[in-house]
Image (cartoon, rainbow, N blue to C red; front, side, top):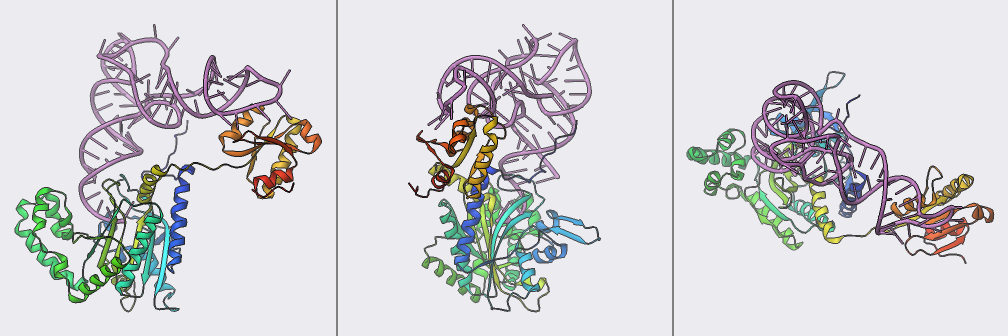
Length: 426
RNA sequence: GUGGGUGUAGCUCAGUUGGUUAGAGCACCAGGUUGUGGCCCUGGGGGUCGGGGGUUCAAGUCCCCUCACUCACCCCA
């Protein structure tokens, strides 16, 4: 016997019962983003490996350990995209999307791939919806992006979340800060956990976020990035905060927010919820400008963006939906043929209904009436249309309203009008 | 990559110190009504007990290995 094949680790099916929620998310995001003047862009799932290596940063965990990278048949190294921003920036540069206007506002949605151990809210194939505002370093753009995300979450019925913001300063400002930070932690490294001692070399900012009690204690006394950033960054951060206030977007400043991708600078932000387990960030982003140069642009291109972890947001939507408990609305006509002789007539009627734009089905074989009625009920049809010998002879059907039990004889034209909720002609 | 938890019917789960033919609820199918669904009643189908090996007269149950799922570390959306 052949072995049963199932989906591979960390890559799950979105089943029909769940697709409704996904469509709501996607449609709401599209409508919102387009109201803010964004256009959709679709880039390939597969890109040259160098795009991500250079764009995200060679030393990041994503690039070093998590990418699905392989040689294609021509011997080129290609990679399944682990995030969306690099591909969008590549497309922006490749097609000179700045030509029409200095500012380009884009959004995208689709699957991303990272080879990680799955857990709650984390998968190997996961979905992101993201936006990028390219071509301006105005903090107004940062605010617009964050406000849009805030409104989207609320439009989806999610209220139980908080916004955390920070500024990482520019790359130049961060360098001396990092040196200070490393010096500080080296002074107290004897009391820190093994992971954090490693982080001194790999990712010192992460130490600020360590969950170990001893490290947290030490992190309290550490120099803060917000004290180290320059005048320009500070002013931009203040302007950003003012815009959030003006839009009634609540936030907390969290100087320990660290982003995992190298290209971030200045404003960064995360939308977090404590209903998501350990992976509590459902949307995160920030400002970047070095990315374009890494991808071969002649000068830096300032940009800001964020991306939503769809699976995590869906989790929150499910949570919010539990409170509503929306009932299903019935629709369509289920045709019931009472015997073999009526079967073909029934097929004709089903097709006329469908051609007229009405949802309609029937059994594939002439089973008992009871069985067909049960099916009509189970599938959530509003009407059953019963077709027996008498009805065929008279050119009518018995149309039964399955909710009220009311039943009337009528021609197929009237059935179609009823099912389309058009007023009856009679 | 590391650690914990869980794998028995389509789903949720029982299954005693190892002991007859592995059960329940829901779901599914049929009948109770030869042309009327939902509720109810009756009956039915469906299981390599995740997989492999071992101990034993005997393994769903004990031991080893393995795989999958899940949660956490790490990291991130």
